Length: 349
Image 1 (spheres, rainbow, N blue to C red):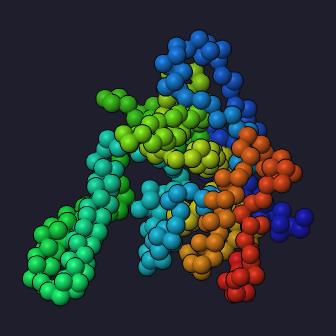
Image 2: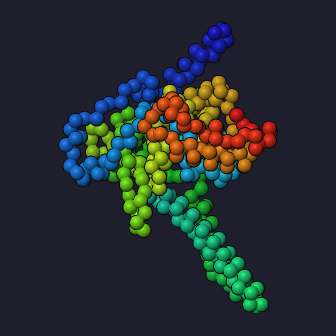
Image 3: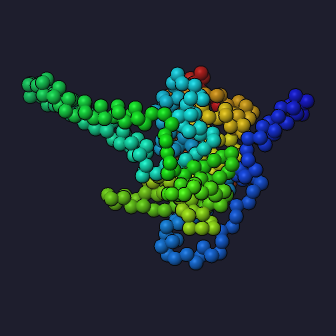
């Protein structure tokens, strides 16, 4: 190692020590506490509430985060803005510092869901209805323009105004209070308690579990939970998923986020935050990752990568390490793409 490299390495080590607390979670030098034997005496209903342990090896092994249901071209569009990376990070509550699980029983979350529902009513209901009436009018040979405009005013305008108001009041950083917060730099999980100060528990004391939920229509969904080993505290993720592998992937992403021995999970939405986390910034520098890989990627390539990632995540032999998976014949997403189909200037290693 040259003197310049040695100096740079020393500076990086000092930066790490200054930024990450001694309590920060590191899967390389910490052992997860064993589950207490007393938990085996839980009642049937307590065991059901806690869910079934995922039983995954420590660490992140699949890492196909493009397979997440919310990763899409709309997130790529959101990155292509005039806002700086710092501004985008502030609006996302600084994703290099904290991950959070919201709850439905809070106004900002409910307003966001309501906003999407109203947008569907405005555009699908109003414009869709007008198009149907126009089509019927063309068939009958009597297109009533006044009736179509009336339908647009009745359906589209009120919903559009409601959507616009909700968009204005939900812009910027969400002011959440009842969410569960995961802090990367301290390794702590902060839990909301009504009428009391928030409770902070080390991330290493939680065990990932999965529960099965049946919806009103009879469909079955899978939900990720975190069960505290030494108490009855159970934290539930807000989403449920149609397939089990999505729960495993969600846990793996959260685990990698909290693990300071690894870079931040490589996702589209949090790409602006990578440069502000020392471990991630050093990893990207060593591996030559472009600063705006996802933002500047060709859409066709992004779609191909996403489809390949979904297949790879679904095929992954969960419960095995990455080395064991590769030895058994599993192929990561980059080996499932026909790179010859892309132009040389589109190809991103």
